[in-house]
Image 1 (cartoon, rainbow, N blue to C red):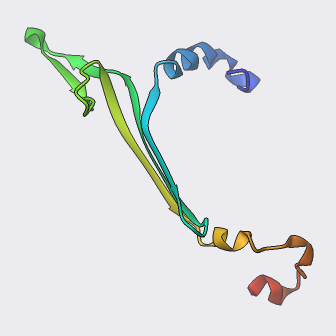
Image 2 (image 1 turned 135 degrees about the vertical axis):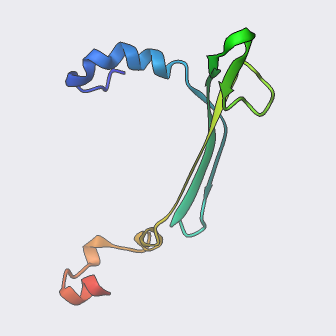
Length: 105
């Protein structure tokens, strides 16, 4: 939390307590051969999130699939594919002519 801007210092304690109880598991990362795409998958876990109901019942949001009733698990998946990234490895700025046709090509 040392990198927070000064104007957010009022939220430092709240953010610290919130983020200290969030963890992850099942992290997976894959990248395409050309480097133009990747995908990330993980499960954010925290103490079980739910509502207490009458008669001693509890409604738990996203119970963990491994059977641990003490945590809630939120699956996150991010994928991207930017075809321009495949060309960046072969791009050399010092040899670029900056002519209009060079930008087109």
